[in-house]
Image 1 (tube, one colour):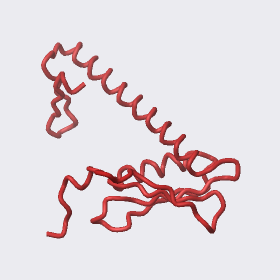
Image 2: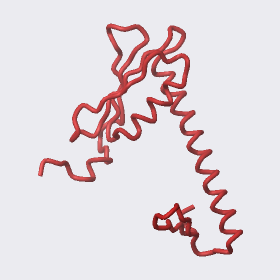
Image 3: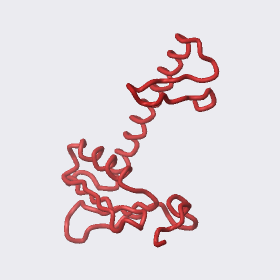
Length: 138
C-alpha cells in the first residue's frame, strides 16, 4: 500500500515542526510550511488569521494527500509582519480553546453534581449513542 505508516503522521524525529519561507515578490508576505498536520489545523489557523484586520490575505493548501503538511500563506499590512501576526493569532487561538475546555469541564462537573454520578457521566446527543466521560478524563 502507498500510504505511510500511521506513526509518521505525528512523529517528527529530527525534523522541525515548521519553517518560514519569505515571499520575494510581495511585501509583508510569507509562506509557513507546517509539518505533521492537516486541514484541521490549517483551516482553524486561516480563519483565526482572517479575523485580524491587519491580515490582508490568509490561505492554505495541502501539497499532496500522502504528505502530512500544509503551506499557510499570509500577507499583512505594512505595520506588522506575517510571523508576528501568526504568533499572536496562535496565542489567541490557544486562549480561546483553553476557555472552551474550561467551560466544558465546568459544565461536566455541574452535571455530575446534579445527577449524582461519581464514576462517569453520560451525555446524550439527541438520538445518538451517549458519550461516556470517565473521572480521569478531566
